[in-house]
Length: 171
Image 1 (cartoon, rainbow, N blue to C red):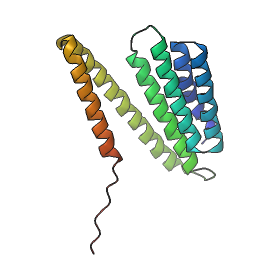
Image 2 (image 1 turned 30 degrees about the horizontal axis):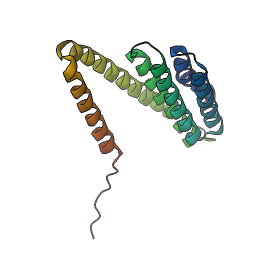
Image 3 (image 1 turned 45 degrees about the vertical axis):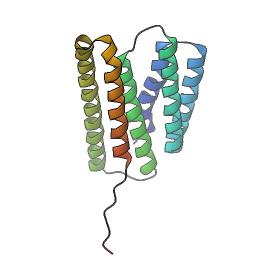
Image 4 (image 1 turned 180 degrees about the vertical axis):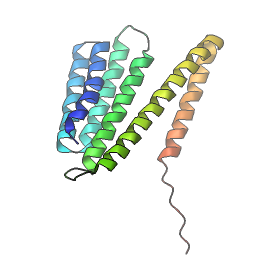
């Protein structure tokens, strides 16, 4: 697998914050993100890619905070999917560095990535539609409660997904 495929998600996660709010701090953070992501892809190491993704996320948060525009759910969805793809590519490059991969393995991996990306895009679309409908029917005071409940559900789900379940051994 060539490493040039990782350039597209790097361009997206670095370019989106700069496009949202082209200020010096955002550009500096985006440059650091680009440097770490590129270094990680070239060295087939996941840690620099993860650090670069974290810098890109901080840069995007700063760009959204400093820009006077509203929340861009489409931009946030594209950013998240690009970050997911970049981390997938970084992990794949780390795991299979120096190995010959069969065509069937690449096809299976690409099918997995496309399926995962399609599920993420569909989930984002459903959540955007649900959020728009919710904004119409729920009064302004109740939206904060619904948002807090949604954050709590996301936190509990992340905790449940992160728990490693090991089978019980019979003594």
